[in-house]
Image 1 (cartoon, one colour):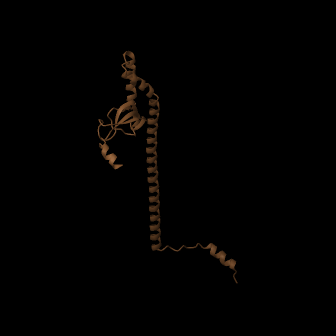
Image 2 (cartoon, helix red, strand yellow):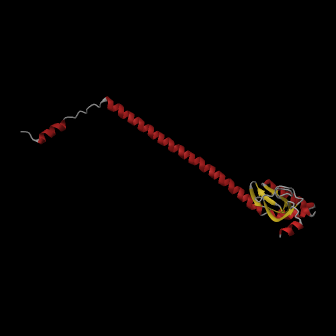
Image 3 (spheres, helix red, strand yellow):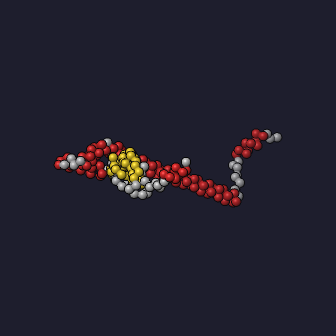
Length: 191
């Protein structure tokens, strides 16, 4: 009589033979492996494209912010020169801008213009509330018909590109429509 122990010891001594896989199973496994690798490659490619798009957007945003900071810093410095430019303008209007002071004034105006500072506000301009601050308004039959126009400049406005540093302070004139004449007799009979 043999025991279970004898059978196991005999089985341990004999190497087991593996069954050869069926050719169909190998082809299916290879197809699955290839499709899995293709899927992984597509995922990694999509991840890389997303990261690249995020980087490009980040770079654009940083460049845009850097330019905005540069414009704001330039505007802040030039805004501090506006009272000086106003004084130079008043001196020029009164004929007091002569000699060496004129050369310094012209240099200052040229330097601020080189940094993009632009004066605006002329008599006859169409009134634009985005550019002008109306200090006075009047109606006049002799004014041009249509939109209100700038009649007088109280203080010149300044801008850098599209950024308004200070609106032009102006007087506005608007065409007054002639009122129809009313007979005094027709008013008295109506009462």
